[in-house]
Length: 236
Image (cartoon, rainbow, N blue to C red):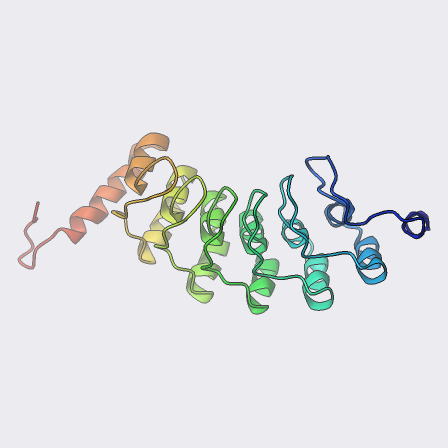
């Protein structure tokens, strides 16, 4: 009743907030799990679900919803409110809704977003990761990685335009999870790929900087196995 009263008195549901955590009232509703409040503001007040958010951890309302442990707000925003699943964001931590879901490992949300047309290989323009696969690799979400690569056909060698790491393999290396590094290499990740973004330049350089000898040695083993001639001799 209070919400309805405030809206009737002219409260702007799209007004940006100075709070870093909650960009506007809609994000507040999503992050607090208040789905009824969200539905009211969208259906009754004409709230813009695709309005770019200029500050805070989320660049869009859908991105904020994708970080939640429940899928209902995501389904409502897409199926009933017309949220754009491939909206490129100019602010926030993730770059788009799929990358946000991949970072937190919400498989049900990820599957729904892909089913609704989310592009797993779309170059991102903002955020810390550059792609959903890189976000999953950074946060050690191995089941998410398997789904993205094996079922959604995410490209393991895509060169990223933004983010801290430059590639999904470099992100996995920085995370120090050998099983994830091995999985990406088994799925075709190029251990010699020269990275154009981020601070490392290659996955091996990232390993030398961040992790123990095990991953570095595995990288050399992979390079050596590719360096064998047909006679079985090393070519370098």
